[in-house]
Length: 118
Ligand SMILES: [Zn+2]
Image (cartoon, rainbow, N blue to C red; front, side, top):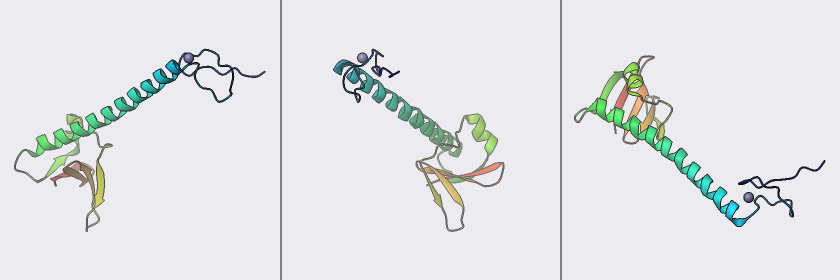
């Protein structure tokens, strides 16, 4: 039995060309607009996580400090998300730094993280 394709937007059955995906231009436009909205909300969520990560590092460091050790738990409790970074680099001693904008953190030990201001 041949399957009847349906409009991606309103799910009305489609007739005619087999590569048709929408029943109308209006449905096509609505679907594309929704996709753009979704894409934007995904980037907004990630932006928010990164901004919060940076705020946490900035708050812990204060104005004067450029380098400090901090317990991983402190970052966890503040809501720091270790999975989101803006970049990565290995220094001359082979230490792996994770950038969060103008800050960076490095796993010092299982419990301790070194944070630096770039
Ligand atoms: Zn439709």
